[in-house]
Length: 453
Figure 1 (cartoon, helix red, strand yellow):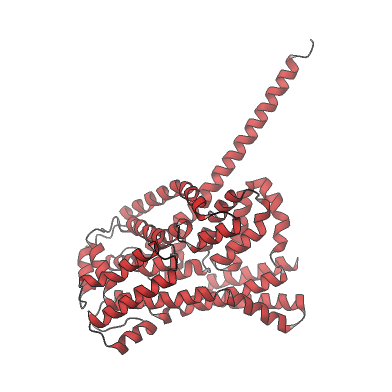
Figure 2: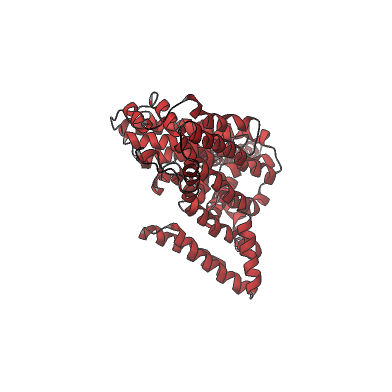
């Protein structure tokens, strides 16, 4: 009873922030107070509570380091002319009608190559958002397309950290899981692309993208070498699985280009790394980035990660487990997995913790390891990015161009994959019951036919 009340109060705090238009950070801070009060009620001491919070925050240190690299990259790509060059190049292929669909396709391709949604948002996401802003494309829909594309590869790339985490938790291998993931994504992928094409036609602004691209390029020396940071991001994952190393090397190349090609002062480039690119005389669309731009997502990560230690030490979510068996009998096992993923994503506020909690709560119900891996990929991996206060969506939307949070509603791929999986499971369950009933009726008819008259 107490656990249900605590979770309800937390959800109420988050919903209240949304209704009042306040930053989600406030709701998460209130949530931390609520969970700390619950932990104190359980352990009756302050020192264990401090250890819980510290243990939780330490689990996010990898994500926080990743934020530093993303901030560096987004600032240096802007200052080096890489963004301007990519926008100018892409402008010759994109049109206002196809921009939304091409943003989805290009982000899907890059995320599959580099295996990270955050890295994709900081590279191709920025390019697509910049083109969209210059062409007057609705940022809500464009943000949804970028978010969908970023998580296509995050889910099924052979170099995705979430794919390796799921494989480790389920006792499978990434090589075994990828073909199954690609197969289950075919219909949602096609439906998402069709939706974005239709929206592109309906929302055509009629703006000439090539002219906007030329405006963004003004003030930069678009020497062919400015493409090197982008080429590094695409090529390095083929020989190295370390996403942070890839972003660092790309940033280092961009740093050198700022000095050698764009003739920036060293102190100015260092300032760009920290505070973002803000040179006078350049288009406002290409300015921004820097480590400071990741301060808000970092605060969200620290708060939400602090929950993890409390959950683990107090067993706050374990009360759900006793209800999952009954739920799986009503709405199939994947339905129970989906409900679990939704609940853990709402509370965990990040993808990694949501995957781990979903596996912890639901995993014992699914004895088939390969099926468990696919169910985790089609639920927790994607649902985490569909929660407005989760860093899985906040970071992608903010880094790629400050898209509105409501863009999540247009991230069709995130919803279509779990819905498609659930519908196929429900259909298979219905067909199995129908066949069983037909067999039972036939057996009854045969028994009646042999009875003496």
